[in-house]
Image 1 (cartoon, helix red, strand yellow):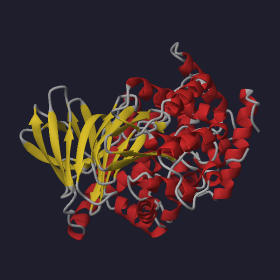
Image 2 (cartoon, each protein chain N blue to C red):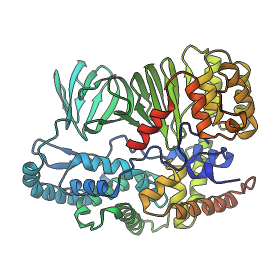
Image 3 (spheres, rainbow over the protein chains, first blue to last red):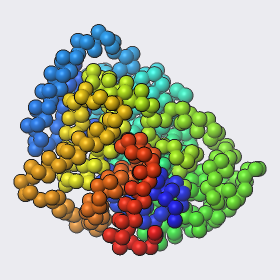
Image 4 (tube, one colour):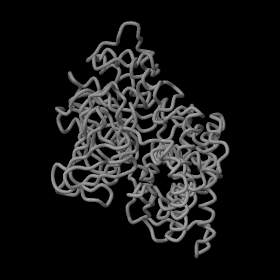
Amino acid sequence: MNDDYLWDASGPPDPDIQRLERLLGRLRGTRNAGEFRVKADAADLAVVRWTSARFLAPALAAAAAIVMMVGATWSTVRVASPPSTFSYWPVAAIEGRPRIGSTALAGSGRLAVGQTLVTDAVSRARVEVGTIGEVTVDPDSRVRLVSTRDGHHRFALASGTLRAVITAPPGQFVVETPSATAIDLGCAYTLHVDEDGSGLLRVTAGWVSLQLAARESFVPAGASARIDSALGPGTPRYDDEDREYQDAIDTFDFDEDPGRRASALRALLARTHSGDAVTLWHLLSRVGEPDRAAVADALADQVAIPAGVTRDQVLRLDRDALDAWWNALGLGDATWWRKWRLENW
Amino acid sequence: MDHVLELPRVPVVTWRREPETLAETIRAVASGDQDAFARLYADYVRLVHAIVLGRVPRRDVDDLVQDVFLTAYVRVRELRDPAAFGGWIAAIARNRATDYLRQSPRQEPLPEEVAGGDPIEAETLAVLDVVRKLPDAYRETLLMRLVEGMSGNEIAERTGLTPASVRVNLHRGMKLLRQRLGWTGHE
């Protein structure tokens, strides 16, 4: 067995490694939850939020050092580096009193880089994302502005729900969650994340790339993808598929029992009909080698293998062959996406 | 291949900064630029989390990760070679974990983790316990891959190790882990 799957989750899936990913992925840190924040107060001095009194003493000492350091450098920085035009996003309360940090928002305010916007059960907020769109933050949500500059805007959704409408070219708006990163490819979508890092992406216009390491899902308009707290993006499916079909996808993606996963795959292949091509195309690279031919045949029933691509290339997961077949689905051209990613990531 | 539209050996979720760009980020952090620090944190928190998780009880991991970044923030101007940031913050993480264990009142190398009755949780902790007993190089690399979801290229980029070294660590570490878990179906 080669090490491709161990290296970057490419190549044929290794059952042992998948099992370890499922188990150990539960231990992933809450890196996007904003627990650690260096944020500016009114005097532009850094303060640090700590979650445990156990480390309070060294924290205070270090925080004092930060205050001295930042205080010492601030006058220089202020002269040399005027604030960026995009150093914050305008925020408006839609309902209730959302908070930015510890400050309740009355009407409107500003969300600066590093700050977290928190809505309670009865509040909602609207955030203007530079000049490229807007994000509505639903009740019981926590979102942090990670960074923002021309052409690159990055949010972190720790928990809750946001709805984004972005009109910029693809790739300019990115939302991190504890278990996946959503990259806008010119679209509108809803992204929900539970406290444990699991969640759901639902796309209403355009398409979205959902990634965790080398595991990636392309979710077109009218489709959704679940997010597992350990494994990341699940296989996309159209929302008008029936519950049984969607449950089978979830079982195949996330169940730890190989028997149930195999049974779910059989159910998926037995029930394919028009509209399932996106799901089947993703399954090609997610099933083991013994099942790949059946998936390829099911996909070929929906969308013929393009000219110049052989079945053998597909079964070997030849990248160009898979890209060509994706292009044949009529949802977008893989070439520009690959080019964009090489230039930007 | 568990990915789509993916170039082999190209990290997917990594900001592939050229060295000079990382240097600019480090300089910006040293000048108190919080946006730059947020980017640095986002890029390196998985590396730090994996190192700390491999050494200390889970209940204290998040606090220690914060502690590591706070230390890095305070001392970043001491860093002479920005390209070495990954190795530098990794060393801070290891030292902070060692300090924690030294100061632990029970003087235990690593307190036992206790599962709360959930069988999956119990198996997770059992596997973590085995991983923690692997040699440092294998343990850290495997935790970055299996816990944090980093690709081999990303691990190399963040740690400063060569891709070849990372590949060896992953391969040998996985082989040893399989043996110790009694999973002999592969390799």
